[in-house]
Amino acid sequence: MSVSVSLDGYIEGPNREIDWHLVDEELHTHLNEQLGSMSGFLSGRVTHELMAAYWPTADGTSSSASDRGAEFWPENLDKPAASAEPVQEFWPEGGAVRRGPTVSKPVAEFARIWRDMPKVVYSKTLQHADWNTTIVRDVVVEEVLALKAKPGSDLALSGADLIAEFRRHDLVDGYHVYVHPVLIGSGKPLFSPTDDRTNLRHLDTRTFGNGVVLLRYERDSAS
Image (cartoon, rainbow, N blue to C red; front, side, top):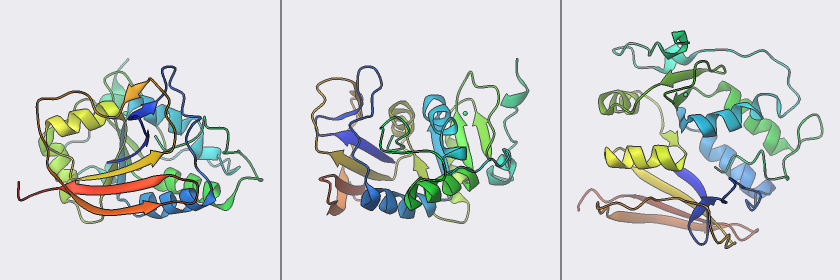
């Protein structure tokens, strides 16, 4: 999982504000490098719709939507037929990202990354999704394991509710937490209360020039 969080543990404000995200060129370039190396993005409906409303044309591109979701879905599993029924550090509301020909190089790069990346959106209500997206109704352990077993790099998981669901099924292997130097006081916490304990192993820490600190952990397989 990869997520931005305030120092007091919230991923968004009480009205879903993320204008406190500090995403400058250095951090954005880093995120492009990290996310661009992934083999797929996994998110919930809210995160996906937020992204789909901005990133496809954030660089001024007017290309039509494409759908290659079936290529990403494991061959031994049936592609969900959801589209036939009557699926956080992504900064479109933060004010620092502009749309069109004047956007920065990192913004233009991520627009391309997002358009081309295979995506899975988990939603019980979403009826249609473009841009290489497969809609899935429920988190099924065997399906996720099949995705993880495909050749390639890691999967990027985002959204507090989806993260909580994956954690319940013990499907989260790594934690990349970007701590922003701000206390927002209230909002949606990154982690919901749980009776489970997960021991982690620290991999590294990186401090960016704008004060954001990346903490990288992986699940401790020895515990």
